[in-house]
Length: 74
Image (cartoon, rainbow, N blue to C red; front, side, top):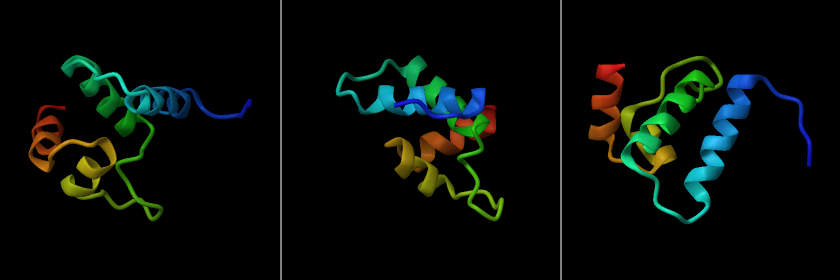
């Protein structure tokens, strides 16, 4: 299947697929997935409001405290 998308969205789709393939990602790879998530603006809802750390954590399979730490560093 081929879809038209932006480069940022394509990177998020690739990162998302990597999280779901069954092999555990290294910590640096998980952090790269988080960055792709943010760059693709997935950290905002349809109205543009920021998601909570818990909502982002749920999407990425990480605790909200980890997401908070990443957000503070980035």
